[in-house]
Length: 136
Image (cartoon, rainbow, N blue to C red; front, side, top):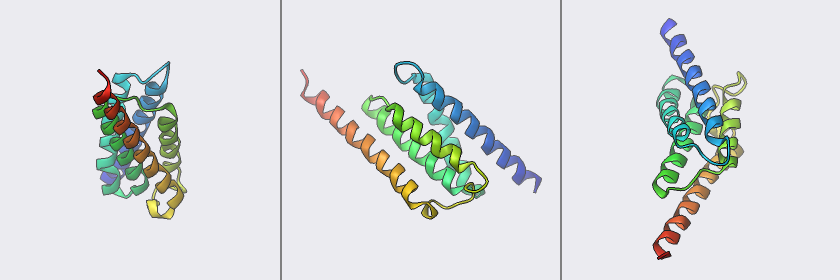
């Protein structure tokens, strides 16, 4: 039981670190590469841990963030502030006692909305790729 509690505390610490990195990534006039890299690293760590210890909503949010950072990184595009804000708020919600153990299917609008955001980033990345291929 103590190990499970320690693992849950580690997850909370990772979430706090991810929140801090997301705030840093969105500050100023654009994404800060080092903060985005940290946010991606914390997202991966949360994704890998959350589902295995019974926090599937956190796992889904972290998985979405990983996809967004991967797509944006490959396309060399910035993550719009609204996307970071949306995931920041979803992350905070998923840590509250009422939501922390919920399955994404129990919140279909939230899950679908976050998945649509990934698709938007993919579309923006494809457009950026097309624009760079056309430009001289």
